[in-house]
Each structure stands twice: as C-alpha cells, then as structure tokens.
Image (cartoon, rainbow, N blue to C red):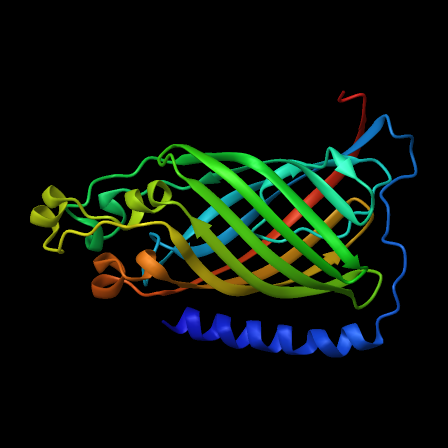
Length: 277
C-alpha cells in the first residue's frame, strides 16, 4: 500500500497549499485560446496514463491509458477540467454557468485481472451517457454535478457531485482541489459489488446483494502547467472511500480495501475548427 500512502501525502501537501493561494488570488479573466467568432469551436484532445485499482474495491494497482476529449466554443474561458469529469461540451455557457451532454466509459473486469476475482465472472465495459451542469460562484471555485445512465456492463444510474478550488499560481501553473461524492443505483453497483449464489459457491465469498445510495466520498487535487496556448500537461490524485453497500461488499471487506486511490499524468493539445454545428 506504499502507493496509497505516498499518494495521500502528496494530496495533503497540494490541498493544504490551496487556501493560502486562494487568499492572495486576485480574479482575472481566464486565458482564451482564441478570440474567434461563436461559429468557431475549440477542440481539446489528449491522453492520460493512470495507476488505479485493478478492480473496483481492489487493493493492488494496474496501469491504464485514458483518452481526453473536450469541445468548447472558441474564446470560451478554458478554466478547468478535473480527472473525474466526463467527456462532453457545453450547450449552455453564460460564463458562470455551463451545462451540456457528457459521456464516460467505465472499464470492465475479468476474472484473470486478479486472483481475488476467481469465481465472480467477467463484467463487460460500460458506457455512461448523460449530462453535466457546473456553476462558478466565484472565479476560483467550481461546483459540478453529473448524472449518467449506464449501458452494457451495467444499466444503472450514476451521479457525481464535486467542488474544486481553482487557483492560477502563475499564468502557466494552476493548482486545484476539492471534495467528491458519488451516488449510484442498485443496478449500477450490483455487477461490481454484488455476489450471486453461484458466484459465492465458485469464489468462496458469501452471497451479497448491493442496494443503491452513496457509493463513495473523497477528494481530488490536480496541478496543470500550460506550455503554450495549445499545449498543456497535468498531474492529479483522486482518493475515495467506498461507502454504503459498495464498501460493505465481501469482495471489498475480505479481499480488497475501502480506500481507493488513482494517480495520473496527462498531456492535451487544443485547436480551433469551424462549423461543428
């Protein structure tokens, strides 16, 4: 669990610095990639490399590559994106309030991923489709909510609630961090945390049925550096504590851990296109 301890130490150091930066921060207009007409759009693409639990609730880690896709009106304030945000774009953007469709892909799970999973069967990858709304009460605080319906690997409903203090320390470096909470329906939890009678016989774990509610709570922090108006890199850490029926699953309590950590690093490139719609 050295990665968990190291990650939490780094997270604590970064988030502890945010209030001091926020106290001295004087709001200024966020940098814009371009000043082009509304008919122009800015597309951001990139990739992240992540170390994350080998399965939801697992205590060991695996590496995963994650794509980044974001679309915004050219000239819109490119304020912030956290590692938990769904891919999407804002159909409504007033500056302080943004809303639009969002999509997130949830990784599948195979018995071969870990000896902990033998007898529990495979879980297919899932795509979650829905929308987001975010509100900036000040220039340094973002609140965001997402609601998504799952397909394929699970057919439940997921909701993410988050808030982030976002502080430009320099024109290139931005630090951010804040609390997280995830809500999920029973159908969204059961494939990952439930254990059927047959699976119990095959795995040696007791049968278990997961109900909906609070799935997890925690916090995240991120540092982003802009090399140019088009190129940027970031590092992040996300910690969550599994709660409710997710945290009480025998898979978690007997073979895994409620403490879940992700760390990652990524790079993005932004460019303008005309007439997406």
